[in-house]
Amino acid sequence: MQGIFKGLWQRIAAFRAIFRPELAAFVACLAMAGVAIGASSLLGPDSVRAEGSPVRPVQGHSGVASCAGSTCHGRSVADGTVVRQDELLRWQEESSPTGAHSRAWRVVLEPRGQAILRRLGLDGAGAQRECAGCHASPGAARVADGVDCEACHGASSGWLATHYTVGASHSRNVAQGMTDLVKPQVKAQVCLDCHYSGDAMGQFIAHRIMAAGHPRISFELDLFTTLQAHHDEDADYVQRKGGKSNAMRMWAVGQAEAVKRSLELFSQPARAVDGIFPEFSFYDCHSCHRRIYDGDAGANVTAVPNPGRPLDPGTPPYNDENMIMLLAAAKVVAPDAAAAFDARAKAFHRAMLVGRGETVAAAQALRQSADALSSRFAGSSFSREQTFAIMDSIASDAIGERFTDYEGAVQSVMAVDTLLGGMVNQGMVSASSAAALRVQINQAYAAVRDPNGFQPIAFRRALGGAVRSIRSLR
Ligand code: HEC
Ligand code: HEC
Ligand code: HEC
Ligand code: HEC
Image (tube, rainbow, N blue to C red; front, side):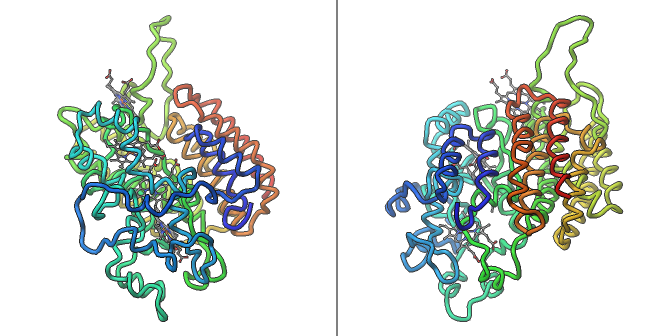
């Protein structure tokens, strides 16, 4: 392994073994061969120009061809003096997660995408309406380029001509309209538009779409940033951007922003209600998708009580995966605010039993707490001690008894993986001692391998084992 991928393959391989099993073997293979992910099976430049029908052109979007020049971001080797300049190639790398965005529209046209469209009764125009907001770049003239550079970096008309010239600086580029992805809050909001849901057309992943065969969405800001990275955090980056990125901060801010996003969308009647039904995608999937046993005297009730969600049996609980992580982080980094956040979260869950008005009011209060925590995290440095304490907090009894559902459990494994990786990156823990703990972390991943067979108690044991072994590094 070399360059930016040093040490990352383990995280990538572990994540993909769970969520993309069909590609995990590939990653493991590369890792063993010591090959940098992203160096094989390149697409020709023509793929960038594949035809696609026009959608919602937005002013200022130049399109990927404008970034692709061989003296710009289209080099075949990463030998740029400031940035790598092979970003296009990496974005096009089909077989790795860094290339997922370039194929985002194509997957809609492939059999799984077509089957989803068919079940929803959507034609081409319907696909543009329901899918293009996430599977293409909002603002691009064509959908065929998938999620292009400007989907994340911002429409470029204001800065395209000047961002590489003498005198360019990150702050000047940002002033001219480039998205400031260095800021964790800004980046989280960009990613969440598609990796949770957004407000724009075609950016809402309703239960209808999942029930038609769409994969469920799972996101963690730092892990996904790592998976799609196409930049080096070298001396030059540190100088231009004021330091290396901080994975712990990114994780914590990502959790707070996800809570905010979820509550914002839920507060809009058009999003939260579908006919006489609530929009099911806001709730924990397995609370409804459970088995029923007609056994002896109701002995086979499988739901486990959850003190974080004081609800009656049989009421679908709001998906609180990010709220649990946010509470675990707040207890360490903002202890004075943690109890209030927890109280507001409980009040929000409980309000569901009363009425929509009450629930939306409780959602607003909870959103405010999450917003305040997001800002505090964005200004915190996350010391070694704090990071260890957050992992302990995640595995503590008080937090552990909230992992009654699959989604929260998955978040906690990604969190532990991310926090450990972050400490390695910051030089707080050596890469070799972290690598030695891989077995335990992979056991925690294995405990969330089968969503339908999820067992809260066994899961807690696996997570506790991983965190205990990490604690030995303290
Ligand atoms: C809110 C954004 C959003 C919307 C709306 C959306 N998708 Fe997706 N879709 C995603 C994301 C994100 C993934 C990748 C999930 C992952 O790997 O984490 C995905 C994955 C997929 C996949 C699997 C791709 C693969 O590589 O296996 C298909 C197929 C798909 N979407 C089709 C559709 C279709 C068809 C529609 C419209 C009916 C649609 N999507 C609407 C965000 C969205
Ligand atoms: C899914 C979102 C996304 C897409 C799509 C994307 N990028 Fe990026 N890019 C990022 C993020 C996040 C960073 C890291 C920014 C940072 O830390 O300053 C980055 C970093 C970069 C950097 C290095 C910046 C620096 O200061 O070192 C360049 C250059 C770049 N991207 C160019 C491109 C090009 C060209 C494309 C299209 C071929 C592209 N990106 C597509 C999100 C994206
Ligand atoms: C405009 C919508 C959009 C935005 C913005 C976006 N993504 Fe994505 N992303 C997608 C879609 C759609 C897919 C799935 C494509 C596929 O399966 O080929 C995806 C896939 C990915 C994958 C691959 C996941 C896997 O399972 O292999 C990663 C990693 C990822 N995105 C990270 C990010 C990050 C980090 C950001 C923010 C900096 C971001 N994305 C912003 C739409 C988006
Ligand atoms: C409030 C209850 C409820 C919640 C919560 C819920 N679902 Fe569903 N789901 C249903 C119902 C009802 C159906 C339709 C069953 C039928 O067609 O027989 C369904 C159908 C489905 C199907 C199609 C299953 C099939 O075999 O046809 C999938 C897939 C699905 N849901 C995924 C999810 C995911 C993913 C989540 C979480 C994000 C979720 N559901 C949350 C009630 C729920």
